[in-house]
Image (cartoon, rainbow, N blue to C red):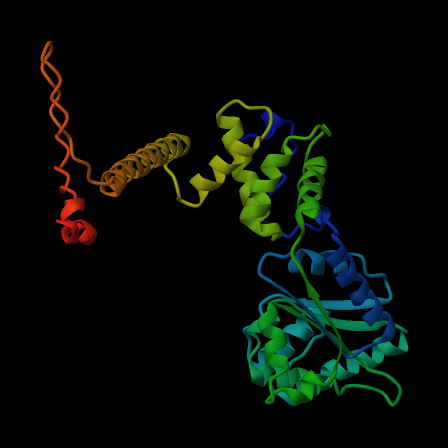
Length: 353
């Protein structure tokens, strides 16, 4: 829909594991290096894990496409099989013809094929995607297949790729026999913010005839926050953001536009109303804050007035004199007590009389 508008030859964020669009972050580079090293060393079991949507399947297909002519590979992406069905599927992937339907004959056919390829100096690998769905019985069958070996090396290498639950299964006590045979383990981690920006631009460059940036830094920040660096979620958010930009006739995806697209995509807002809702919320919060501030100030002023009233000392007040009235006379001094008669008190005068 928006391909012609942005100058894309195809949609850059399809949810298909196209090896052409494989972006090698540091984690993906290390996972690929681990796989190549394990194959070169002839290790029996290899375990690669990662969260849903971290690009495991895309990595597997890129790995298989880059194998040389000395390596023969079987890729199994539907591991919900029984033990016998698993061996049949492996034989079918290798092009092994079989007539028998019992497990022993199927394994014998596979063993003969492996010996032949070893004589041709070729390596044989089985890569099982979504391996967390394997049952314990099937995992035990894989362990038995890993016993197909010469006195010097393994005839079959098995790569298990799956979600973190796979590692938990293989670490369990019941599966310790196969867990102890895993010679190499690696976990793919999500992208960081810088990798997310580079990932978005990398896919745009492949799909576009132009090299001009379409996603602004703010848009990449919102997409990273939403996706937590998981490539599948990045693809979903970017596709929706491009569709929104196209519908609004915008040449670039801004941070506000990406945020709006993500809200609509996740059902947290109605189309065309997200920003209006946000504005109403902001106005409501502002009015509430104003009311609280006014209430606190008024309450403080009233409290101070009441406290001041009760702190004042009680004083007597007199009514003011009317105009022109004579001032009130000063209160009379209390009468002094008369002094005692000195004559009566003089004893010498009484004797002379």
